[in-house]
Image (cartoon, rainbow, N blue to C red; front, side, top):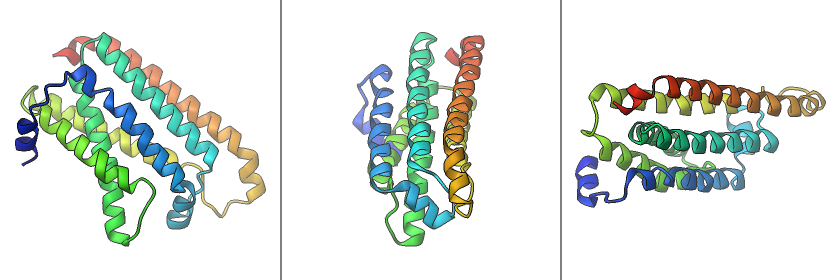
Length: 204
């Protein structure tokens, strides 16, 4: 069904244009999450602490990683694989918002853009690329994309439980934000090295 819709739409836009839609929708999605009180929602529903500072640090680092990934994909000629990764990641994120909202019967920050933007964007991207590469390569991209989303979720939960003493939480907040940013930068450096080293496989 999704593949039929993708074929019907024909997707004349080149990969180089389509891939830049992801940072745009990422910003829109993060704006809804922040404006909708994602940090307070996480504390209320899961009991984890995520302050505005950590949310902003993680989101900003994620945007940088996304843009750097696109630049590398264009430089080393693997935009289709990166599209699969991004498509799987945003589809997983949007689906998680939808499932959570349906199970609890209430709004969660990011639900609107998750359902209206990321689910269709991810599904159409994957449908568009089905058949353009080997099944193994497609599956690899999907697995990586899901892993990226799960890693982001775990990172957002790494701030500890709300039951922590507030004074101690405040004093450790800047350290956590710096740690998270440093971790993401290290992941970026490792990814850059691996992408450059195996760029031949990525283009295959």
